[in-house]
Length: 152
Image (cartoon, rainbow, N blue to C red; front, side, top):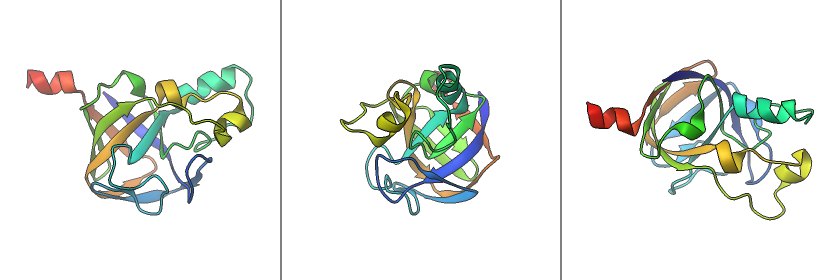
């Protein structure tokens, strides 16, 4: 499976929409340099497919742009929520391991208040950075799903 990086976004605090940037330094076992979600835990990077955001646009939610759901990487061409935990994502110079599919939206989530509904709980995914490096908007994302690794 292949897709691409449509946008990269960061924020200084958690639970708020993020600001888009053209490139990011991803640090192994930490996350994106300068992002509030970075740290030594299992949700270092959040990814959301633009196709998921399109579902919200189709419901009539206006003003949606990349980073609105607090995702670090907005992708194109992948149904992220179908990628099994443990799978590897090769993004730019980096390697990630899928650590979680979806999440619970915390009470009083600014995103849910602004948008009315959040797709991250069902369709967003999270990764740990295994190999750090630079990622740029437009970089290819190659998925090595866990079931594909077993067959090798």
